Amino acid sequence: MTEPFSVLPEVADALADGRPVVALESTIITHGMPWPRNIETARAVEAEIRANDAVPATIAVIDGTLHVGLGADRLDALAEAEDVAKLSRADLAAVMATGGTGATTVAATMIGARLAGIEVFATGGIGGVHRGAELSFDISADLHELSQTAVTVVAAGAKAILDLPKTWEVLETLGVPVIAVGQDRLPAFWSAASPHPAPLRMDRAADIAAAHVMRGAMGLPGGQLVANPIPAEHEIPADDLAPIIEQALDDAEIAGISAKSVTPFLLARIFELTDGRSLEANIALVLNNARLGAAIAREISAIRR
Ligand code: PSU
Image (cartoon, rainbow, N blue to C red):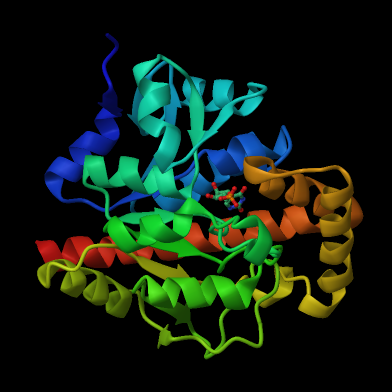
């Protein structure tokens, strides 16, 4: 049997020393962005975390092993691979046990981070309640993962292709703290603003770190969602995007797209319909989340020392 779990030495050393580490997912590389921007972004995000005094740990399953931290060769191979599985809580162990390869979603990345002892994870946007979920029941496993796995996830909110009010409602029901950074309203992925008031607002990484540590000290399971707005200069205003999202959703319905394929299909379609602008915004917001993730990880390390 192959080794089920492998932590890159650089990551293991940092964790052993109590130095800050930030986990990164791999589905954004394989299913969220087209090649070669995906690998360029993956490298840039890792560099951004290093520049902010933390160690990056991109997570993926390769030939049955759950890797926490990918060397350059593995990162390149994953970005170029076609038809990589998209793994969540339900299929992670099964694919590992059968020697498979797959990219980890937010849910599966949280599981990998937790196993390694990483407390902070930065990504683009979490999955959530899909529009029409009252009929399809399509709700991302990311939401339940946030309620049971103690990792603080930094995202630009949930992707605006979703039903955002229902997504925030489910997170509240599940007892997940949703913290907007620097503003009173929740961000909406490509757009900094939305009409939804933020349940919590924090403006300092130190406060977010303290809340994370407090939850742990109280024995509360689950993590926190940090909703970090895209920087204003990179945003696509929600009004510009609304008709494009409607168009992409119509196209998905006509094409009969369902389950795990919905999010990748919509992201790719919105990329086409915005002439690539959505991808530039996505890259900018991931880099911004990497910076904040590093700052939160540094603060958690400082508290734990
Ligand atoms: N963030 C991005 N792009 C992405 C994702 C996040 O900027 O593609 C991925 C994450 O892996 C997240 C997944 O878990 O989209 C949500 O998929 P679904 O809606 O099928 O749960």
